[in-house]
Length: 245
Figure 1 (tube, rainbow, N blue to C red):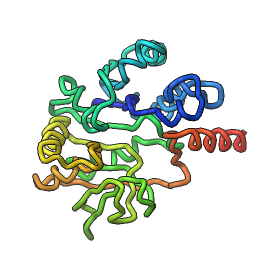
Figure 2 (tube, helix red, strand yellow):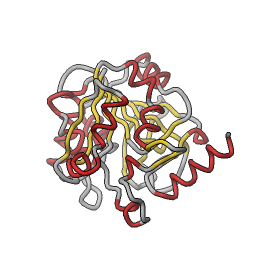
Figure 3 (cartoon, rainbow, N blue to C red):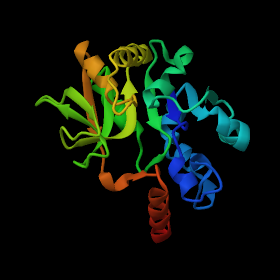
């Protein structure tokens, strides 16, 4: 299994918020965000054969974020992103030489913390012999990505920033074969199936649905999910840690 974590997203909100360092290096409880996120994914990382981390080249050069990651996981492979791409779906494709194969692929957003083990979700997808799956929480707010399932629990539609069900994805996606993500993502881009010019990961499932792939979800407790995508999310998570201490 290959694990790919996206640390290459835009951190404009942090710059505008007066933070001295990029989002990945913003401190949470005294340690960089990237360290907190990697710790949160440690069970999936431990179960993986390869760890891939996407990062913007400008950040690597200026802030040595890749060096930080290698100190934490010496065997990780850094996928340098030349500039901010047209979305996360494109950033994943820049790792094509490592994921265009028959191996399992788990793609994870690099700005989330989930305070529960994640391998049970992957094991659930395997047990159900799914070609792909998404970890979800219950929500109807349009800031999320959504997937809709039929009465058998099989995914029938995916949408970005448009509520089509109460199944909001947390930003962790499973593919039984990495090459199927690659093919589906390329098809999505060829069709220009973007949202405001951005290609998101969740709608890639629509191309897999068209190919008759068997997809499903694994729902987790929303109270265990924390988004660190903006300064407000970081502050909320720091407050949570203080209250828990």
